[in-house]
Amino acid sequence: MCKLSVVIPTYNEAQNIQNLVNQINSALDGINNEIIFVDDSNDNTPDVIKAVMAENPNVRLKHREGEIGLATAVIEGFKMAEGEYIAVMDADLQHPPKLLRSMYDCLETGIDICVPSRFIPGGSDGGLNLYRKMVSFIARYTGKILLPSLRKISDPTSGLFMFKKEVIANADLRPIGWKILIEVLAMGTYNNVAEIPYRFQARPAGQSKLTFKVTIEYLKQLKDLIKRGKKQMNVKVTEIL
Image (tube, rainbow, N blue to C red):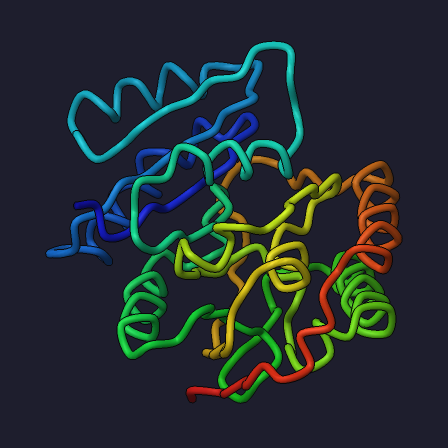
């Protein structure tokens, strides 16, 4: 049985794929895993992934034609995932793949969701420029104000997290923006969350996908979750430093 599925949405990330897979394989050495790329690219990224697949039997690809969007890509990855645990991360290497091992070890202790945080001791958002730090701050605290399920989490808008597959077994996930974690936190079924520190890294290649459009989609997502999200008031949140 596959123990861990790593879901990675991609859009024109050809320059990062080989390095990313190498680092994930190193981090998860000895753990039965699969790496699922859900790709919306219009460049040669799917060809690069296929070449990597030839050397790495744990790598899978779903290339979507005529469809684009991080949220729907990740949900597609969830449907494909065969692992007992599911991780989500970006393809741009700003999320350190070595953290996958720490997240996995965390879930092995009985934790339901592990969220690496930039905002607990040992963490840093230094890989963001000033503009993106400001956007991230506004998004994070807007979510905390509007959704009770986010208030105990220091980094609820992170794109890097891991959870037990059972957390979303009966969840009505309908994300329309760029933040999947808030959907899982608001709609999932879980008892505890652990946060571990991480340092957000500078992008080595490619360009950021942050646009005004995805910001508006995030606000629409929050509005929708106010109506249908769970309160999650009794969840235990622990910092593991």
